[in-house]
Figure (cartoon, one colour):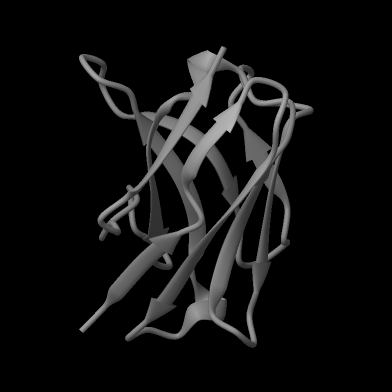
Length: 119
């Protein structure tokens, strides 16, 4: 059974930093693309960042580029999201997800970790 467990969220002032972690089990981690998404109240879930299994390359949403860094540890089966220079508009529930080889979309998902940035 695939399981994703996020952690590291919290309350931080604008300009602060947080590091999110997502521990993944139940699959061959190194074969999967990994992603972070977020959903703010009243808004749809949006893509934040992804890191790919074959190349280790990364992509980011324009809104977080230069501030967020996604990384993976294929020994610990964990994906991270380092967030700096946080803004109030980064406030959301952050989810991690996996995408298997050839899969068209990300899924399954974790339960999310809340990030709240105060102004």
